[in-house]
Length: 422
Length: 166
Ligand code: SF4
Image (cartoon, rainbow over all chains, first blue to last red; front, top):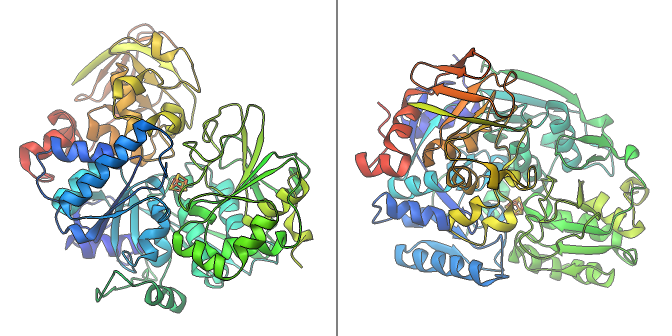
């Protein structure tokens, strides 16, 4: 019987001929924790009687969620992480290095065919590189650090076939928001999502990360794509730390069994917006255009990459952000910040009125860097708009593409970016 | 394993930001402190009302969103005995078992706030003592029941030094 990408990777890494619903213990290629989850993992590590992190070069801690630390309590937790990483000779990416989900692929820790866990739900991002990568909690991370292994129930898969090509002014963010709206927030729970089709093939790797990143917003365990030439070129360009490790991509078999196969025509898609307070509360931009906004956020692990900054700068260059809007920009990593500086993008954004914050999660999760006031509307390139997500349960968060966020920042109201992208 | 307690009812898609907001969870490892804010954005009085052993009853997709283990830990530390819902988000589900919080998949539509419930995990049945009704519950996979029986994954690892899935 044919296998899906998920079944193939979990079979190979467990040494078992595994299919959907089998329980396997598999060997991990990389393990990651961030500053919201690692302190509890360190505590669990100790409770488990852990002495040593197995293969510490295949594990990293990232200080990105509240970085730099806004308060004493967080400083103590960061301190704990640094001390643990040092003692265990693990990699620790400190403040300013970037968001964990940008760093894992960018630093070459993850590649095609890999099996990765991260103590962060958006670990599914690396599926764009053909890695089975999934979010776990702190205790699972601790067990993975000690044993180098993890148990998995092999998920069934749901396949999204995206035909056609996205029109101008419509981006991968619009596509994934649309798909989530279609299947809803639990439409892929316990499943692996596979994304394929002409529309996916045409996307850059940066744009594909946005789609894989949001697989969790439909409940999926992983968001997987095949490795094509673009992926291999990307991996070669970013293999600083992967050294000589060889990656082995997997493709799904033609007779693989899927729980569902859904086909869409991306050629007809319009810009999409997820409205408060649910990611699956999605509508075409026309329905919300004109809604006033007070804060705009460009960044996060969903859309803080160089291509995203370029798209936004293309709209904002030579213009001014609306006087009643605060535009906050958080590049996803130091490398991206430097590239954006080299290209003059940062100058364009700052001249247009943007406030630049440290590469990292920025204001995404309400720990610092731009908490909205009561009753305010925020338009953001992030992946979640839950009530209270940005630390104020009386604010309203709209999710959209970098182009929509940039256009809306200019006008002070939710705006169709196609007017600016010719 | 048998659990008995009073029902506290919530809707569908209760995400981990609602269970414990990001603005609190990053600040501390003190779960008692986090427990004071559990479910705050949905029901500001929940943390003060909940009694040890009480049961959280919810709709579909409980625990969707982030991987924060502070979510099951805050519920546990607030005294919640178990969460009952027709379906759970998978990371929350794992985290709950790993930290020793029983999660029960079953039809929760007939349960009202204040109902006295008895959950019998081994025999796979939920008894609504107030309404004299019985509902089957979806059995936990054997490995998860073992982890729960050990008191969570940390205790399981202390016992076996690895994943004992057989
Ligand atoms: S940017 Fe937001 S979604 Fe991404 S890892 Fe950080 S807090 Fe999570």
